[in-house]
Image (cartoon, rainbow, N blue to C red; front, side):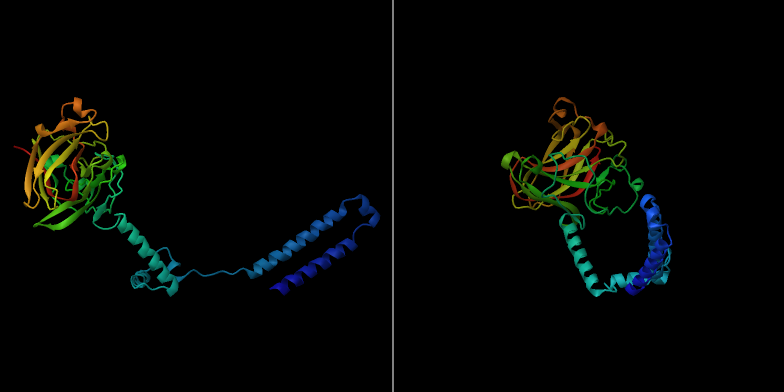
Length: 336
């Protein structure tokens, strides 16, 4: 290749010298810019010569068999999938490195709760009532949003029949702690298949009163329609829930928090309290609308209106709990 370039350069140089020898006299070249013209001709010849080398050295590479068509055959697809599932590749070293990278990525996704059935919110961002945002976690919805029935039509908010973190009415469970306001409480929300004979959401964690903190909660929106954002529960008389405590020291009071348009701030809600003892099995609790009292800016000065309920939270709040273990197996609207 190099010798071919050298040969073409020598021939071009010879042609260049012959043009100069055939040109005007030295006296004329002193006053006319003719040599620049010959220089341009020589440069063009050199470029032509170089382009010839490039054309001669250009190689057309055929694409690999799997990429040779926009619609690969079934045989190619099955072969590719089989090789992928067995961890095979043309380069064993690069394949093993890719597998290691993938394993690290999956480990990270499991750690942050994007893969698997648990939602870890030790470092969750939210206030007592939490921001109104999309739920994190794996997308395991088994049917289209339009296939879900509103909780005010069925009377059921969640019976644990859908894949976690989704509710029976198509919304999603989320977890929040007091860390956004400087607290140190932490928790974990998960779906357990066998909690004394029932499938349940279980809220694990620790509630600390340090630095004016003191809450851990699981919460869900009540409306699946983002354009409406609320439900009218005026046809019902209150909330009914099936709960159980398994922790060593979490007997006592827990709250149910409801939000509507009057709750202008994140720490505003309508709250009702229920009592439960640890180790006493499942308990069905009923809270009427009259049990809910306004807390924070807005609700404290506004009567409780159930025609536009937006969100519901079940909260361990206001007391120290070292071993929180609160299970929820059913959540409904009830009529007396």
